[in-house]
Image (cartoon, rainbow, N blue to C red; front, side):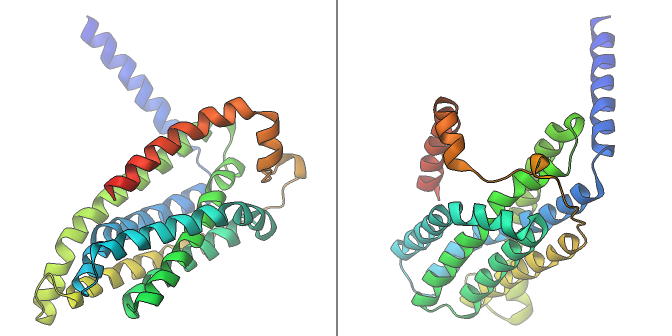
Amino acid sequence: MIFATRCRTLSRGLHAYAERLKAFSPNARLYLTSVVLTGASMGVFRLLFNFYVVSLGYDNALVGQLITTSSLAALFAALPMGYLADVLGRKRSLLIGTATVSLAVFGMVAFPLKTMLYAMSALSGIGQSLLGVSMAPFLMENSGEQERTYLFSFSSGLQMASAFVGNWLGGYLPSWIAAWQGFTPTSPGAYRGALLVTTALSLLALFPLAFLRERPLPREERSLFAPFSYAAEHPVLLTKLILPMLITSIGAGLIM
């Protein structure tokens, strides 16, 4: 009896979840398609890029410095990118951010000089910052109250799932490319070919974004970027939001 009740509850929950997914707007669906491609792309990139740098003869210290450069660039660019996203609009911000990250990855792979690696790492951080500050307002503006929570959670879950697929694919790509080109799987050429695949996936993500339809919103409905006024009005809430992310980010940085 208890089992049957739980099954009915689960069935109703799944049905309600499916109904919320059906309510996603065309813009939201296009964005989620882009998320799948960029998530898989970054999954491959994050798995293989460090190996690629080391295979070129650079030491592990450079790997850490490149990650730091990207993170610092994203940090310092966050406020300017937030204001820029309001000026450009969500569609153009997502397109420019995705194209910038793609260009940065291509630059690091095609021209692996130390100065170029630093410059492209910084550019990648700026592009990711623009994407990061544009994503939440875009989802807010393209969802209703009923499906909004589902859209945010589905987007996050889809990103993790596609990154998982990218990690899996990245584990095999160097071996496949090495067998095709006659390299060893741990050679720079094998890693370079695999990372170029990530560039192609990232560029493909531009296509669904290009079909987004932006409609002018009244000022009161737009998610405008105003961090300082929000911090002044809600200091305690902002601290509660930022502190856990700061701690987990420090841990993630140590793992990377």
